[in-house]
Length: 398
Image 1 (cartoon, rainbow, N blue to C red):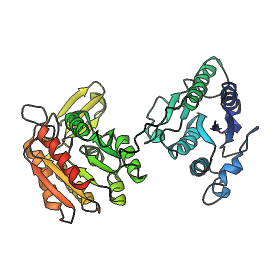
Image 2: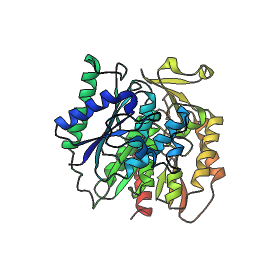
Image 3: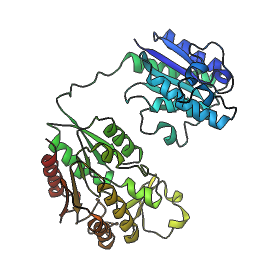
Image 4: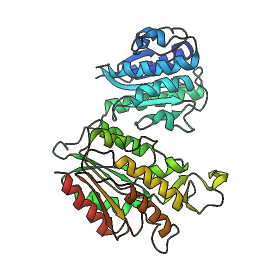
């Protein structure tokens, strides 16, 4: 069995990290204690801070700067490079506060999806997106501070150690899908009928990987594109762009679509859910949007209808990205509506706003070999639109 790497700042979290290591060993999992401190070395490390820091591209001196902020950032980079070079790595676990969380999560994010990762953190009940990113990190709330072994930390850390042991000892075998190339699809609740229909039409020949367009979903999808793990992308749901440009909470960042540009992977796209910007509970919507058209999707999600002006901006941003794509492209406009709630009789039906989006795309579109803009009279979730997406897929993906 490969080893569990127990990582943390041994100068301040030594007893807790050694407790994790001992539990893993007792459970039958070989464990290695890795010190990632930035001030002084801890005791008992199997791999010292100096060994980890030496993995920084500018050497250990770039880590031990004497300034906590820059030292933590540099050690995070060094730890990520360190982990990527470990041939015996079977899983990673860490525990601590903000500094430890920053360092250890950076290493975890650099590892492949599927390799076990457990992080006990005092930040585990807040916004964990900066730490988890597009990875599959299992982040546990420490409840109390990670400071000493007490009645609470003993249980929480114990659960974490045994969780990692279980993940490592009972890995789910990879499915036999070597003969089925992977295809990435982006989906949201309001584009589900369309994406489900497309996936059903493709699943006999392709391994359909559906990503929830929640910001991290788009980032995870494009990480797989950059890794060369998908044959094509059916990007029905580009809603994350609206959040990026208007100020919602589900942006995938300004780099959305850049992986497609870099790789030239076949891309079949549309404007799914660009009628909305996403926020949390109704009370969390920023004051500047108080007079906008809002729709409470559920108690934790509030949607805001995009305006014609915003849609024109979104369309211009989107088409500028598409014009930079070098691979085969089919981009489909559903003139009948871009989501379940953007059709006649539904709360976000706004033909003027949709037309502003479509016209911005038409105006900015640059013709190129292998790149086609296709307009259809259907709504995005109509069966005919899904069928057109599948037809376009087969035109450019063999």
